[in-house]
Image (cartoon, rainbow, N blue to C red; front, side):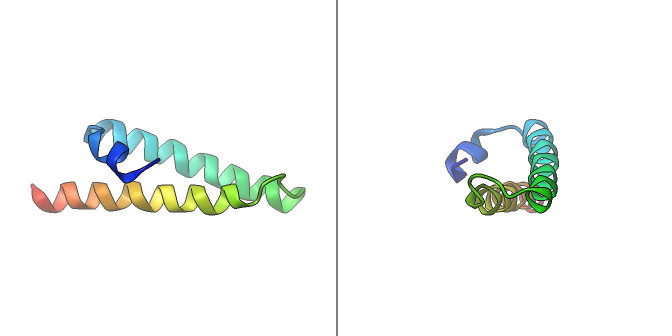
Length: 64
């Protein structure tokens, strides 16, 4: 996801998507440790998306 797309989401929806993204990331890492993923760059992208979401949530928290 691009940062502009993330900023358009509501706080509740962003929190839900963050939780889902973290669960998906953990599953990807587990699957990759058992048998290599076809595209290991997905792990890196998922980690960065999670960081973007957390950053936007923190910005919203600080601006209240």
